[in-house]
Length: 358
Ligand code: NAD
Ligand code: GDD
Image (tube, rainbow, N blue to C red; front, side):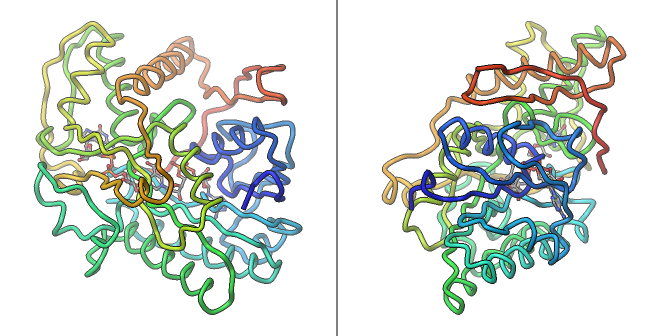
């Protein structure tokens, strides 16, 4: 499949990755006929003027039918999600995203959509294989026997299987990527749903601004993850969508980093050293997680490669501007409203702070 010949719908377009994906596709001349999210449009991180932006609740089958009308390719990035602080305390909410993917699959099948993309997660992997910080990188077969992250991970695993059976039984072509922790600008950095990279940037900046040089770190700081810059995520998602890969596949960096190392890098950006307070009873998740990229290399001859330091610098700088705005009492997120071609008239507008749970 070449997306340039398709009519594309992006679900979850008001969110972090969905917003970047819409921009990336439009910049490349892809016909994104609709961008859909449950959030009010003024709360979307990025809003394009070159697509139809729709507010809809994709848990509802009828909304899904309207969302995919006339589409030939559908990306599902809509989910109730967040970092460990959110998913550990909102398991039922996370599992209810099963309605979104199920109804989107049903609507896509009825609308005779040619291809469907599902954004799964590394949280599907068996917890027993992630007990050590020095983890063996997870290969796709490590999702079974199943022992996924409680709540969120089980929903992702179930939805992966729904995709598989819609393809096998009904002929709806599905592509599934298992994202490993994604970070970058124009995503959640405060409010309870933020993941470690954004949270650490924010906490270091807070320490610098307040002059109180301490930081609270969840867990003992030795736990490891791999972090994928959002541009690699959008590029990989598109490549997987256009490919003939019929099985769920890792999309993540293979650069293993401990949370302490993440803090080291952000401290360097800030030019200060912090006293680290470890909160051992905070939501922690698995001890170690990394992506085995053998399969994506085999299929695509490519893997995410943005160096953490480079991507994190852009994230840190963006969060810094957000915090400056907050300090000037402009309670705002920056939503980028853009026309195309890219760069023709990019402008930034101030919008009300989005409501966040958790
Ligand atoms: P995000 O929260 O920024 O975006 C998700 C969007 O989905 C939000 O804007 C939300 O309003 C929307 N949404 C939720 N329920 C909806 C509904 N019923 N109808 C319409 N829209 C709805 O999250 P993200 O980081 O952009 O994640 C995108 C996808 O990638 C999600 O499926 C997520 O589970 C998956 N994923 C993300 C990461 C990561 O590190 N960011 C890792 C693994 C998987
Ligand atoms: N969020 C957060 N905030 N995490 C922190 C903090 C903090 O202030 N301090 C330390 N951590 C630790 C967490 O305890 C956890 O051990 C690690 O940093 C990573 O946390 P997150 O980034 O929140 O989540 P995750 O990597 O365990 O899971 C994320 O990635 C999955 C894909 O790999 C989540 O976003 C999942 O939703 C996602 O599917």
